[in-house]
Length: 377
Image (cartoon, rainbow, N blue to C red; front, side):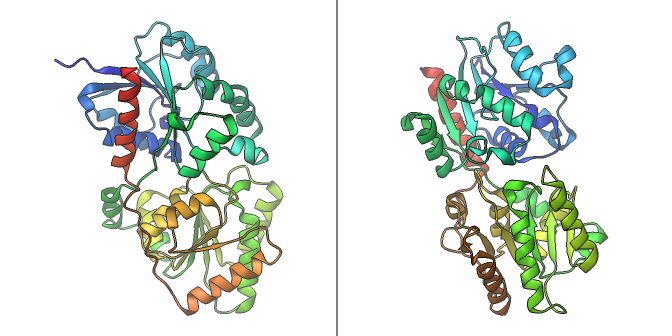
């Protein structure tokens, strides 16, 4: 009988609605090879959210109870309660899924990180104050304490090694993937009428509305595009919740929405509606200042939608030579984006990006490879 290795996991992202990190953890767990050889202990201050309920049916997943008074705050649970709890639990390896490890992690427990981005250092003002403080407090310690770091893109991996002086031979890449079966299942179902009535051929953007996503720039682009033909232009659909963007800009965006009625902000969109809207859109826009990866771009390419995006390295890892990359800081940037949008709708294109390497099975296999290596050391 095989005695499974016990892997502790920061599962706090699984306690909220579906998010990028939560999806990454969940899909890797569901695709994990040799499940009989590992038991994953999901440490979270709150119960697993219904969005991730299918994870609870996995035979190699355990959710330890506890937290007490710390269950109300994820930071307090992770930084104060969990280090004490782990001293009394026989964990062989700890996986820091949010690029942070619990301080005072027992020395006997090896650890590795999943690293998503360096927003903390490259764009700190785009983070909420409390999150920025907590990450800055423990980030360097977590990198030093880790026996291996898995980043979600080549660019992020290189940035981590360069910024922290971390050994390249102890780092690797686990690209996020797509669950094609889930996407096809979503497309086989009818979406709500209010989404289907939007029609086809619109411009689409998908992400939380927060400073790093650069929506003020895209709004200026769309205004200039609208002026080209005020009576016959494509509507702009934004799928994403309003995050911690500047309040004045949010009001400006909502005012524009009310005045012209050609901008639609859709919050709380489920996967069925999301993929119907991807399928029905004409063009995808993504002007982010910085990304650790870029799941929305990958999803758009899966649906064979052409994209115009900011010229950042991670987007080039995804789109290759099949889409348009444009500057966002150049003095003529807005004019370049408007011309690209106009040209696309005059002569539509279908991208030919190779996205086969972006599979959850690949990410799970690489993660298992690292775990097995660390357990043997």
